[in-house]
Length: 294
Image (cartoon, rainbow, N blue to C red; front, side):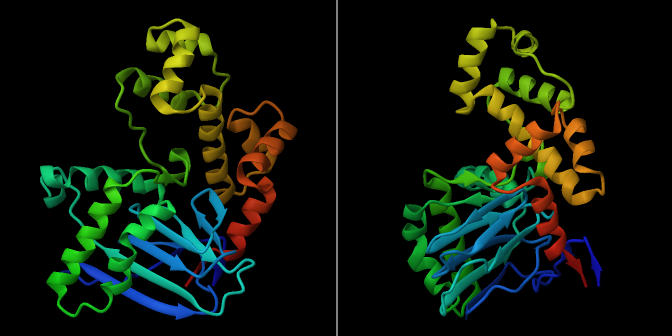
């Protein structure tokens, strides 16, 4: 085994299979950080204190956790951390759906599912009320013997989740290697500009020019359309690229800091720790400690 590499999971889904459902009870999480071709909906209960890592997102989960991941390149793991539960339950559903322009999911009745699947390329975490809304269907899914009815119930789960409010993405788009998307042409132009120029100083006046607005009007417009302050958005993009470089390269933290647009190392360390709840070196060490190839 070689350290520093992410495990590439071979899923049990065969060529014509639609679903793989693993419903298990256990006392601890031991599987290393990994990614895989298949889409995945992962439900965990009675696991308060477990650490969930999805890309550059690192969070401690509560009693219930439900995450959808639809990117083959997005690393993820649930780590034991401080969880002391003797009765952890994990239901993992791996599946394939044709997301192409002419695919089944592109039809009108599935519009909300298609939108949710696109968001889930960064990992999508669902709030407790959404989890409770589909709990019975997830709870009984592994007991359905007929493949057709199991698939029908699973599609109902996806549909109900796609209609819920409060789901949030986990990894940053820059870490997850996801193209910037937006429903506003002006916002999209600005996001693309930031993505191309994140290594340099980015001035509000320049972004306002890109959007064809005054600086003060643009700041309000960006917050209204994205729900985020412009400065926070730029920092998150830079941190996403920095996190990806910490994982994928052996460059020093100082090199990474300056190459991602931070003008001094102490500032980078302070912002990283505030946003990620750990230092850049701890983030790198944790990934390399758990990333293996078999």
